[in-house]
Length: 429
Image (cartoon, rainbow, N blue to C red; front, side, top):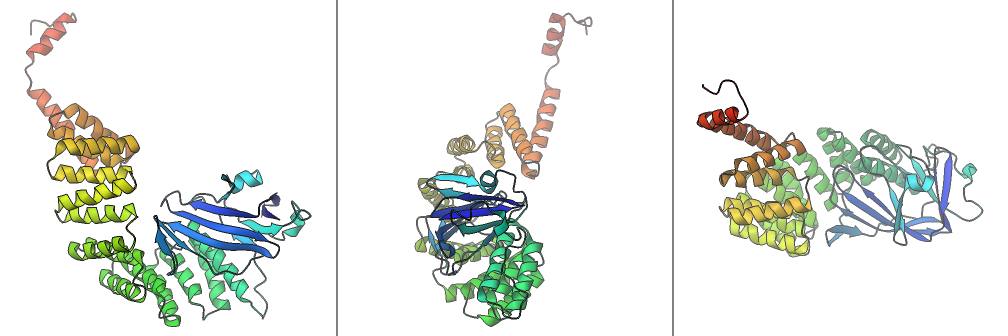
């Protein structure tokens, strides 16, 4: 068996029995992966995982957090065709098999752009035959007749979720509208449209859709988490906490709900409650470095710098990322241990030389040590890398004025000697 891809009249095939679809959001850095199997009946998805989350990319309640990935086995029937959406707002789908990955553009031998790509199982006689593909833009079953199957709604939902994931929220909303019309008792149809509306920043309408989904399925923890996220975006912290609390009651092993509720507690400066939730998340999955980093930041905000450093140490042990060194350096700096802070900032920059805040913070250490030129160079680099990092812009401006003021107060005699040595005519002045 093979898998065939089609878009804009171009059809290509790959001889594979199984493969992984992978996608990375180029802005939010969310990683999405799906394992597929090619069967005579069609394509079967056997496993899925996501690292990070965003509108339309939330893991289902049965997902388990393992090594930083939410993992689950989707309960989806074998599909005759699958539509893969693309958007300039995010990365392109990649197909991986036998340790090698190719983008859809690589497979098709042309830039896919924003075209929808159709994927289906095919055999040797089907390969590269464009007549098999009636439409690249609407590769879905007929949903206009009186009798609508569950597969029709599922196909719409899958395409809507793919569009949400790519940032094509208007397209996702249109598909979700059709899915709701066909199956108004399916909570996933309302939840998917809610995700699209949240992506469009229409939080009130998104909450209305999540309300409808919850009325249909009031014991679904994921739906409460989705509505909680919309409340948080709408700056309704109390209602967001209420919904996350209900999600946790329904699914007390939901690490994401604990971390999301902790983020709200931290925002309203209830650091004690945030630490409680972050500690429970760590207890549920102690292998995730990001959980220690998040709790470390909360400890630091609560002036518990030693505990913060201990958490950053564990995060670095699990995953030595630049941002973890940056955060630990900040804690050392707040403890007035400038040597340790400088070492961590240097390490962060060595790992990621585009990390503007690391340059800014190192500049602060250099300024505290009296090394104004090095400090100014770091502030300048930070402001260049991130012009919206106001603290770096402010530090650079203030230090430049300070250097100019100090220079103006210096004696003029050495400068005159230098001018005479250069042959200036006014040496007598």
